[in-house]
Amino acid sequence: MAKVWSKRFDNTLNPFIEKFNASIGFDRKLFLEDLDCSIAHAKMLGKTNVLSSSETLEIINGLKLIKVEYLEGKFFPSPPSEDIHYCIEEKLISLIGETGKKLHTGRSRNDQVGTDIRLWLRKEIDNLEILITDLQKSFLNLAQSNIYTLIPGYTHMQRAQPLSLAHHLLAYLEMFQRDRERLKEVRSRVNISPLGSAALAGTKIKIDRKFTAAELGFEKIYKNSIDAVSDRDFCIEFVSASALVMSHLSKISEEIILWVTDEFSFAKLTDKCATGSSLMPQKKNPDVPELIRGKTGRVYGHLQALLTMVKGVPLAYNKDFQEDKEPIFDTAETLSSCVKAMTILINEGLEFNFENLSNSVENDFSNATDLADYLVSKEVPFRTAYQVVGEIVKYCLERKILFKNLKIDEFKKFHPEFDEDVFVDLEPFNVVKSRTSLGGTGFTQVEMEVKTWQKKLFP
Ligand code: ARG
Image 1 (spheres, rainbow, N blue to C red):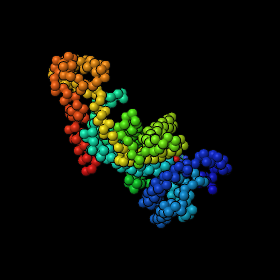
Image 2 (cartoon, rainbow, N blue to C red):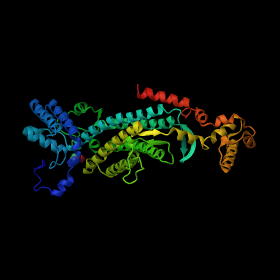
Image 3 (cartoon, rainbow, N blue to C red):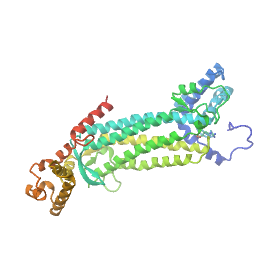
Image 4 (cartoon, protein in one colour):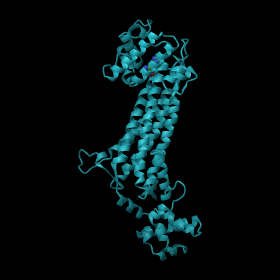
C-alpha cells in the first residue's frame, strides 16, 4: 500500500523496518478515541469554514460509518497501516474519496495521538474509580461483620497487640481512598487538550482549540503548543498512582497468603478462589493473591520504563513516545483485573477461622503493654512499669506460662501496686476495647469509623 508520506521518498521501506516502526499492533486500542478526536476536529473545521458544510458532513458521516463497521466486526485495524491514525485516515479516503484527504488539515499526528491517549486514559481512570469503590465496599462489608473479631496485630512480623479485625480491614479502606484521590488528581492533568498544537508550533489554518476541547470534554487546553505535544508526565503520573494501588493490593495479598497457611490458620480459602496442585492432592493454593502480588512488579516495571523513556528526550515529539502506549495499556488492564480479583476474593473467597483467631490472641504476650499501662494507671512511671513487665515476661517464659496463669501474689512480688483487677485488664477483648484514642482499635472508635464509611460508600 502506498504510504501517505510526501513524494520526497523514492523508495519503499525495508519490510523489517516497516514492521519495526509500526504501532498498529497495539495502538488499535485507541480506535474509538481516534474517531472521536477526528469527528471533533472535522466539526471544528466546518465551524471555522475551513471545510464547507457538505465536506464536513461527508467526513463526519464517513467516520461514523467506520465506527459502525468496526463495532460490527466488519473492519479491523491492521497492517499495512502504520498506526491507528493513518489506518482511519486511509479507510476514510477509501470510503469517501478526495474529501477524506481534507481531514488532516491543521493538525498533526503529534497532537492527535496526544489527544487519543488522554481520552483513553480518562475513560480508564473513570472505570478504575468505580472498581476501587467496589473494592472498598467489599472491605467495608467484611469489616462491618467483624468489629468484635480479634486478630493479633504485628510489627516486625512479631506479635504486637491484639486488634479488632475490622480495624485492620478499615486500614485498607483508607489506603484505597487515597488511591482514588490520587487518580482523581491525575485525571485533572490528563483532562487537558493538546489538540490544535499541530506538529509543535501551532498552525496558520483557522482552528478553534477551545471548540474541540469542549467537544471532547476536556477541562482546559495546553497553553504552549510545544509542551502540549511533548508532555508525557500524565502517563507517568497515572502509572505511578497505579503502582501505589498495586502496592496496597500486594500488601493485603501477602497478608491473606499468610493467614491461610497452616502455620497461621486465621482463614481458609473457599473453593471459589482457591486452586489445586497438579501433584499434591491435599493442596489448596492462594493463586489469586499470589498473582496480584506478582503482577505488582509488572506495573512497577512500567513506571520505570516510562520514566526512562522521557529522560533526556529533547522537545518536542520524538518517536520514543510511541513507547508510552504499551505500559499504560498494560497498567490499566493489570490494575483493573487485580482490583476485580481482590474484590471477589474479599467478597467470597475467605472464611475466617474464628476459633483460631481468638485462641491466638489468648495465648501470647500481646497484652504486655496493657500490663504496663495498668501500673501507669496506679501512678507508676511508664519506664519503671515497662521494666517490671519485662521481668514478668521473662519469668513467664521460663515457666512456659502466660500472664493470666500467674497468681496475684506472684504479680505483687514484681510490684505492690498489682491487684486482682489486673486480670480484667489482661483479657484481649478488654485490651482492644480500651484503645479508645482517636483512630485507635477500641470498639467505639471502630464502630464510629464503620458508620462513617457506610455513609460515604452507601449514601
Ligand atoms: N504512532 C505514533 C505514536 O504513537 C503517532 C505519532 C507519530 N508522529 C510522528 N511525528 N511520527 O507516537
